[in-house]
Structure formats: C-alpha cells, structure tokens
Image (cartoon, rainbow, N blue to C red):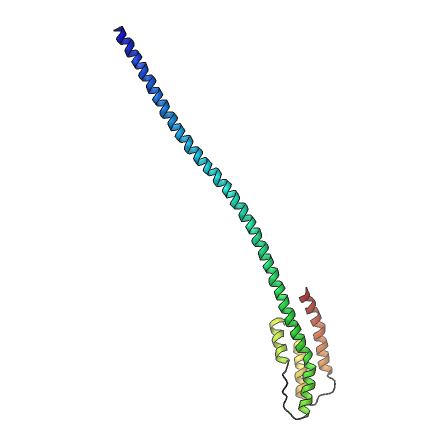
Length: 183
C-alpha cells in the first residue's frame, strides 16, 4: 500500500508536471503566435508610415515642380500676349501713318474725277483699336473723324492741321501704351 500510495503520489505529481508543461507549451505557443502576429502587424505599420513619408515628400516635391511649371507657363503666356500686342501695335501705327497718304491720294484721285481705288486704312485702325487697344479709343476716333471729314470735304488744303493735331495726340498717347507693352 505504501508502494501504491507512493506510486500514486508520484503519478499524481508526474501528471501535474505534465499538465503544467502542456499548459506552458500551449501558453508559450499562444504567446509566440500573438507576438509573431503583433510584430508582423507592427512591422507593416512602420513600413506604411515610412512609405507614407516618402510619398508625402515626393508629392511635395512634385507640387513644387508643378508650381514652377505653372509659373513658367503664366510667364510664357504673358510674354506671348506682349508679343502679340506689340505686333498689333506696330500694325496700328502703320495704319495710322497711312492716313495722311490716304487723304493725299484721295484728293489727287478726286481732283482727276476718277473713283478712288485705294484701300482705306480706317477699318483696320478701328478693328485693331477695338480688339487690342481700347485705351486708344479717343485718339483713334479723332484720327478717323479727321480723315473722314477731309475726304468728304472734296477740296483739301495742302496741309491738314486737324489731322496733324489728331495724329500728334495719338502719338503722344501711343508712347505711354508702348511703354506699357515693353513692361
């Protein structure tokens, strides 16, 4: 009995020891599984955070480049607008300068009794002024009215003081427009 009692106590202790070892194995396995999952997820979070930082830096860099490009485009549009305005300003000045010749040619043709075959610069002046130079409306209208009055009068004096005054006023105002175009 003593042997049975000792064996059964030993067997009970052995079973308890095995139960504790099994509990420890399952506990460590569960802890290892949890720790592995935790470290895996934590690593992914850190990698995502690093990727997010890289993407944010790249986006900031690209936004800076886009801003620089847009600024360059705006500068290019402004330069192109100035170029176009300068070209049309030159055409307007050429048309204005043709007014005196137009009046003289109209006078000599009308004196001969022939119908004038010369092209009037007035429609071109009016079109250029309306499209590109509204600030010159008063001066160009004065030039157009002076030319029309001289052409309608029939007999023209050798000099055209009204036209010359209108041309002088146009040139004076045109100088400030030219300075504005030149920037």
